[in-house]
Image 1 (cartoon, rainbow, N blue to C red):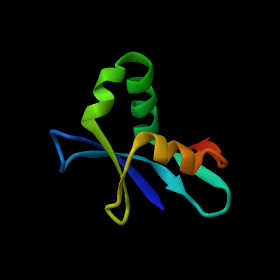
Image 2 (cartoon, rainbow, N blue to C red):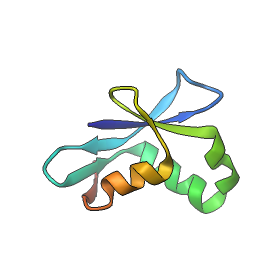
Image 3 (cartoon, rainbow, N blue to C red):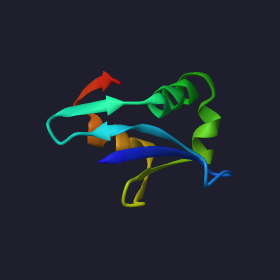
Image 4 (tube, rainbow, N blue to C red):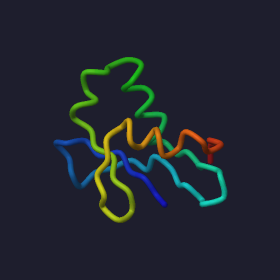
Length: 76
């Protein structure tokens, strides 16, 4: 399952957060770095971003983090 970081003002532009390969590994991409950057340096912007999966299901940041919590996170 692929996950995407979308800024609320730019619905057509997105960054790929990463992919859950279904085998216990989450392959992180540039969007995960961007999300962590927002959390660390500019948390008030968290209200302006959305996370969607490849089926266009929107989830909160906490829902997304719970989904990948038990997975091994690796960088591509």
